[in-house]
Image 1 (tube, one colour):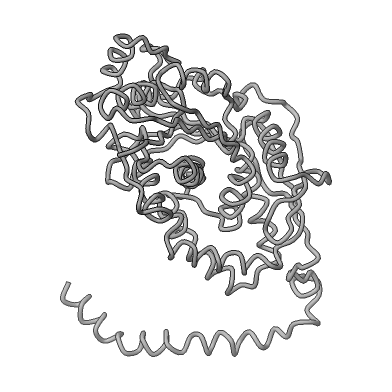
Image 2 (tube, helix red, strand yellow):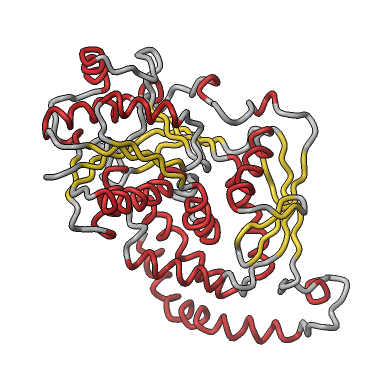
Amino acid sequence: MKKILLAYSGGLDTSCILTWLKEKYNVPIVAYCANVGQEEDFDAVHAKALKTGAEKCIIDDLKNEFVKDFIFPSIQANAVYEAVYLLGTSLARPCIAQGMVEAALREGCDYIAHGATGKGNDQVRFELAVKSLAPQLGVIAPWREWEYQSRTDLFAYAEKHGIPLPITKEKPYSMDANLMHISYEGGILEDPWQEAPENIYLWTKNPEEAPDKPQVVEIEFLQGVPVAIDGEKLEAVALVEKANEIAAAHGVGRIDLVENRFIGIKSRGVYETPGVTILMQAHQAVESLTLDKEVAHLKQSFVSKIAELTYNGFWFAPETQLLHTFIKESQVCVSGIAKIKLYKGSSMVVARKSEQSLYSEKMTSFENMSSFNPADSGGFININGLRLSAWSQKNASIKKSVHATA
């Protein structure tokens, strides 16, 4: 072993891990912190890493890559895990891992270390990304190696080594923030019967205290990618920030769920995902106008698989890349505008339009039958009913016999 690159946040776990790595391996440590949009004093993180023993601290601004290469493709796919979770952390991890691998190779590191616990998903996401991008790099996962069994143990370790801490024992839940969402897990949230306290939410307005007047927002898409809000063209990061600002003010984007981790453990998580919630809704609305029926249904059959692969850490796997190639191709004509109404924690699509729209008011209208021959529907129904009639006639005697016996 020559040098270790540590995924570093300056929080409890990685602060202790940095000191522990120095003690155990006695090699140079490069601390790596990715800026994916979290509110962070990066100067303080940099100073703390060096003070704690890092040879170097890299602060890597990945916000643009995070939005363009991870968030927007997930919106195009309408990827939602277990029908609720919009994958904020799941998308950030491969983005960070990619930055880590590039930095490790650049800095001459032969090992990567991370602070993911042995029970969580992030260990899988980080390590599968490394195996996909640079399998020659070794991985150190202290939570699977050292003697410490809990964050209470880490508090004691930190106090012993004089490591300053960002959280308190009274409020020990784990928080992960990025441009897309904030997640809260552990500590006071581990009882799924206990409602999350209001003071846990750092981003979204309490829906009960949100404005009494609804707000309608127009979101424009070009080939499945959001490009403008209320007519204002915005670059990728600025657009997500604008969407976050609007949705958070109305309390939109809060979810509380028990999810199934990849390793088989159920976990209770509380999330705030304001901007992407309305971007995803708007995207689906534009798709409803522009996608061919069979393409839309085929795409929908892939959605849960893409979400599962993303959640489980297979972002860089060949099957995920193949599915995203299909998704990108399906988005060529997904351009248009959707209106979203926000009010006290809720958001709903109220209108949509597109120059690529396949919707025909003339064909759909009950007031005009001239463009559609209703008599054709009879033959359509008869053809589709042939197998049902044959099945019913063939099985009628069997069903009667079963009922008589019963």
